[in-house]
Amino acid sequence: MSSQGDALQQAQTDYEQHMRTCRQCHADSARCAVAKHLLRLYNNARRSGGRAGAGDR
Image (tube, rainbow, N blue to C red; front, side, top):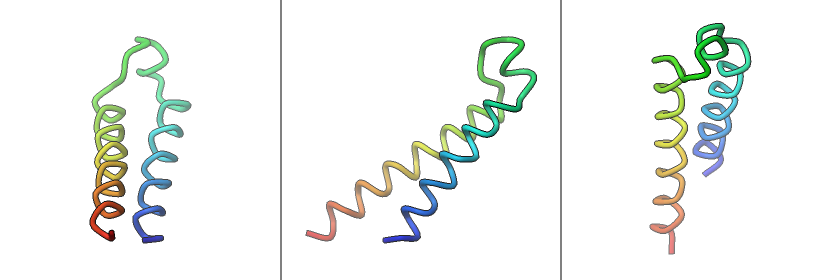
């Protein structure tokens, strides 16, 4: 289970770091394609973590 937790943490860190450093995201005040992709990865990791926890019961 720690690997799923690690994947979730890494996805969140990657997204947050991108949002802090991306010029396009700051200039347009809208997410660029990379930010949307990273957010999608984070959401998928978060969802898969919830499914794994429910299946362990």
